[in-house]
Image (cartoon, rainbow, N blue to C red; front, side):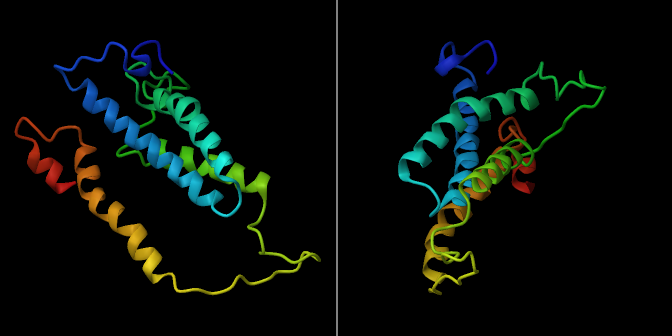
Length: 166
């Protein structure tokens, strides 16, 4: 949501521009997964697609530009002399995703089957979540090591020790 590099226009393949674009793309994807997790069993597949497109194309780019751009009003202290600092997306990615997820579940309501016709609490049928947890958590666990190491944006030029500590 800045003034340059729309849809990869003008990215230089000889520099780290493409790596930065891919890095931000993964952050936008992570933000969308927070929202889709909150909306699971609450909204349709079409609703999931529409929210993912709107979040990744409009909301997330605006939030990330406000916080991480070199001329961002939150990052440079231009607003009340308060500068916003973020590392590894803890603020931008998670707060943006969590805020949208909170609004989504507030509008949509409880999961189907959670309450009966009288509005009384109805427990959902138990099931074995261990296989689902193992299958669903394995890819993020493996990706997390590279993801956080890459968050320092300094894995080359003798900085691999710093990336390794992260």
